[in-house]
Length: 628
Image (cartoon, rainbow, N blue to C red; front, side):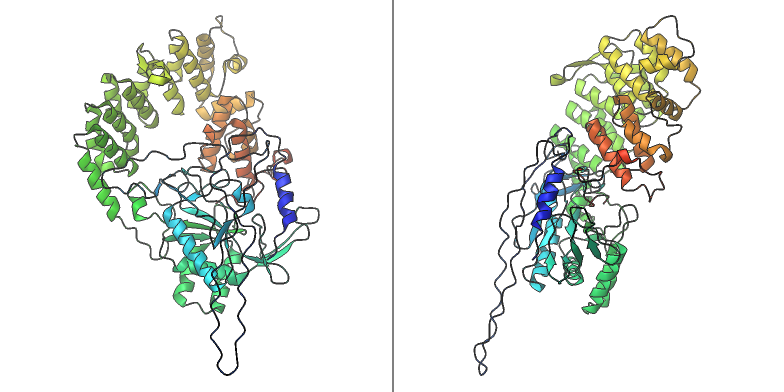
């Protein structure tokens, strides 16, 4: 087995050299493999007359545990975002230990995540991926890969399946892939051979060309390395995945040339027509990502327990798959029953579960709970209604009468999420209220400040004149929040407003400046406001289109309102909505540059300016395993 130790140390040195500020490190149970067990030797027959049966080879021993390398002080690592164990509204009768995939593979999360069972006799993790700590997934995924790895080891003793990215302990976004959010995605390394036909394990994923080969370029860290696709072991791995009943496969993403090699090997080995047909359907080169020429990307369907927890499917169904909805229907029935339970906590969890399951038929019952005696239940109802449809009228009506501060805050937040004039009217009316909301440890906040913050999140320009008129009479805290909302909605700050005016008002008060600005710009749409704001910040964005994608990417690192609007624009143009608004701006800037750099040719974008590249030896993300 060829190990390439020099390459491993070279990559570590390169990846520790970036000068960006260190961020919190997300490291879970990190394990790896130093070497693979050699195949057991076949015993020599005893005597030609009464030859004894060959002894079976001993089972492979687990690979030795290897401590993961510690990131250097300047090594960029995954930001800690969200929580490691997100909240889930369990109901009586639920399995409290089961893993639960919630939401979809792009926007979901994972409850009761299962750590990869490492050390393991048939599995290990690649050296580069080991540093990322993305070693958590769902129970069905673990069982599926264990089945396939055992099948491979049975056919090819000593073989170990090398693992790439899985997910964070609580699920959610990772910067290496668009998916991998809720425990239904996993990356497996491709088996490779050297020119002498011996197995090779590299420290990272290597992209193979259309002939299934990789040759290191002169002067690169891979100089002198030559490897090729191993059709025998790779087909055996796929065969093991197909034979497992632990999970329902939806896709096995792989590039088209490698797909053809796999199917040819299956035919050579005499696979059945049914197996070949199923493999041909599941093996897919993804259309909206890189071709996956360096790893297998598995995606499984929502398991019955997941469907009862709010798991959502994306894409076509795998061959023969029919979702088992019995657990989901039973969970809905229990939730509807507990809506009327005597215990407020159970009523609240029932509402939260119906919202996760998006049971729109429960809307009327949830609206009734806006008047529940328990503030916890009323807060849960307010939080749930945006998931169950457009209910701005019911939310607005409740805001008029609600007295509990937590419920008021939830109502304001809900109104920021639902469209409609009722929500807009309720929030703009709240701008002039003098009431204070006690948020406990967060302190007391004016209702008007909460309303201004909610209006900023709606990305709707219509409240701008109302915000301007509320400036003069607002308390200092609300005034700051209104100014923030105006910057977000218009993409201008006060200095830019004064600069943009043809005629400066006599009074230099914030309200006077904003009134004058709005008078000159009210006939423009919001996209034009945003474009002019980017221009004043030094970015020649004439229109919000992909032709200006690199300027928008650079703008992500700028002032908060410029960064927010650049990211929201990039989300709209790309259809990709990561949690980057919650990241430090320089990390979000890096993420978006990298995301578009990986796709610019396929999307027909202008070439990326060389100074913006995220690729190269000093880039901690410089692995080709993203865009899943």
